[in-house]
Each structure stands twice: as structure tokens, then as C-alpha cells.
Image (tube, rainbow, N blue to C red; front, side, top):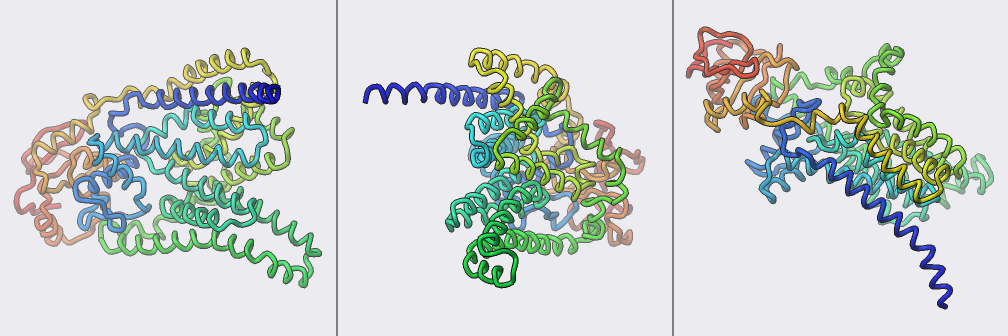
Length: 518
């Protein structure tokens, strides 16, 4: 008995030491992210960050309304619905409960969803890779990807959608592997519906990893039933109806929910003349891009270069080691990695223009990147460097090298301050001259429209962009007066209006009670 306990303790000691090491590395990854959290949301793609944050602000000020939420940048009724605001609700609850600023609450909410997505990724990897250390290496790689460090600190909904998509895949595969427990299918459907509501463009990144095992199950069941003969198919449908019914529910119900949400959102967008240009016929090219884009290698190269942020410097060797590791691993691991990689490629190819225009869209495929990099780490640490002492030294040197080569990429978010950002100074000036119940017109923004000025002014407003609002002059003036638009922010000099100062290239004007002009 004593000898058995001693042997068990001997086996458990390395596992506990490994778990401790992983815990320390995860804690350090969080510590790295906590620097300068109280900073303005003006890093890369500030327009999307403040679009999220301005909805959180309305929830904090006016109460949470999930199905009638406001993004007050295009005038009354202040609504511009796209995604279901699960992230915004969580951030607003955190801001109201903790008394922290909305910027900090948004960053902390994104961090929370990121680490929840890491937990789901670890669960998926444990299903497919026999060595526990392989899954642990993938988890650590996911937490330490410079790209993930940057974007997990921002006010973005993407890691919320990644968490939901990975949860969708995890519970569906649990249901498939465990011979159909209904609670697993129910959780899969719940996660899938939420993933489709929050950001449906993320779902294709896991769809292949879900669909391939289901197809293999069907193929194996048909083989046992006698092949693809009509009688065999009929027998299979009667025997494995749980498999077919559950798979159809898990696949179709999230799609149905997404279509219903988009139809309801579209009705709201078309109801206002200021948001009618968000109609599907205008957005489809922006969402999907063109076949000419996909056929041009230069555009693919633009996207491919962004993967540097997943494995910079010498870490570029890790994906090659990871691919080699998978070739030597068991069949399930190979299929999982290939299906996740193909899913990422499908997501990019489907929503090509979004991935081309927005660097943050790669968050959807960051789990697949982490799997390849993490397997490379596993091969290096447990195949090439079997000694724990060498492994510890190599890990320390690797982290130092990673932070050193990623410093230029991470320097901006860790250094920005409210005091030095023009948009924050402009927002403060607008607050000084505009009462809280009055509204602001913003013209001539370089991006056409961006909520950042209105968000830091804490004012609702109207972004006038080209032909966004086409009205007769008298009707427009009446609209502005009735809705208390009293302040104009523009880059143009207006000698006919009293100026309230210039900040960051924008001039602030107070409009007369009856503007009389556009």
C-alpha cells in the first residue's frame, strides 16, 4: 500500500509542478495586460471600440435595453442595431456595480471573455490531443500571443463571440462523443444562438471542426448499416435519428435566430433616413468583398502579413514545429487542427473584405493560430528539451524574446493617456459648451463617421456624412431645432457662426436657435 501511494505521489508531482507553471504563466499574461487599463479607447480601430462603448454609456445612463439599445450617432431614434449587445450589457453591469469608468469596464469585460475563451479552447484541445501537456502549451500560447495581448485589452465584442463560438463547438462535440446527452446539446444550441446573435461572422471559424466529426459519425454509421444503399440509409435514419435531429437543431436553430435578429435590426435601420444606407444591398460588398479581391495575391499577402503578430521573430518557427508535431500525432489531433485551420480559411475567404479592411477580425481565427503555435511549443519543450531544467530556462528566454520583439506592436496601447489625446480634449470642450440634454452635429470626420467624438463628449449626436441625411433645407432646419441640435463640430471655418474654440483640427460652433442652413 505504501509503495503504491509513493508511486502515485511520484507520478503526481510532475503534473502538479506543470499545473503550477501553467498557472504562473497565465497569471503573468494577465499582469502584462493590466498595464494602463485606464486609458482612452483610441488604439487601432477606435471607431469600432467607441461604437461599442457609446452603447455601454447609454446603458449606464438610461438603463439596459437589450432589444432596443442605442448607438446615438445618427440622430433620433438613436438606434443602429447590428449585434446583440451581450458584451455591452456585461460591461454596463460591471461599470454600474464597480463604479469604474466605462473605458475600464469595457477593457475588463473583454479580458474576462478572452480568458473564458481560453478555457473553452483548452477543453476542446483536451478532447483531441492525448498529452495533457500539449493542451497546456496551446493554452499558454493563446494567452501569450502578442496579437491576443493587444486586442484582448480593447473595447471589442470579438473575444465575446470567440468564447461563444468555442463553447458552441465544445458542447456540440461533447454531445457527439458522449452518445447524445441532451444537456450537452442544449448548451451547444444556447452557445450557438448567442454566437450567431453577437457576431455571426465568427461562427465559420469553428463550423468545419464541428461538421467534420459529424460527417465521420454518419459515414461510420452507414458503413455499419451496409453502405449507401437506400435501405441502409432508411435503416440508419430510424436508428440514429438522435444524431440527425440533434445535428440539424444545433446547425439550423442558431442560423434561424441570426436571420430573425438581422430582419428585426434591418427594420430599425430602414426606419430612419439617416441609417437607411445600412441596407443589405449597400453592405454586402463591404461584408463579402469581390471575386477580383480574392483572386489578387496582393490582398491575401496583406492579410498574411498580419499573422506576424501571432508568432513574431524567432517564434515564426513554432508553427512549422507544430505542423510537424501534428503529422506525428494521433489521427484525431490531425483532424482537429486541419479542420480548425480550414475553418479559419473559410471565414477569411467568406468575409474577405472585412478581414482585409479590419485587422481585428483575425481574433476569430486566433484559436487556430494558437493551436499551431502551442503544438510547436509542446514539440520543443517535451520532445527536443525533455529536461525540466532546460524547459524552464527555455521558457524564460522565450518570454523575454517574445516581449522584446512585440514591444513595437504593444507600445501604443501601453502609453496612451487621456491628457495627450486630442479627441479627449475635444470631447471635454464640447461638454463645457453643450448642456447634457442638447445634441451635437459632427461633420468632416476623416473616417466619414466615427463615434469617438460623441462618446468622449458624452453627448448624443448626428454624424453627417455625404448624403446620409437628404432633406429639404427647411425640413432639415426644423429637424435640428425640434431635436435640440445646438452644437456643430466641423473642420470647416464658419464665419457666420460663433466659434467656441478649436481642438485637434476640429472647430466647435454653437448654432443659433433657428440655424437656417445645413
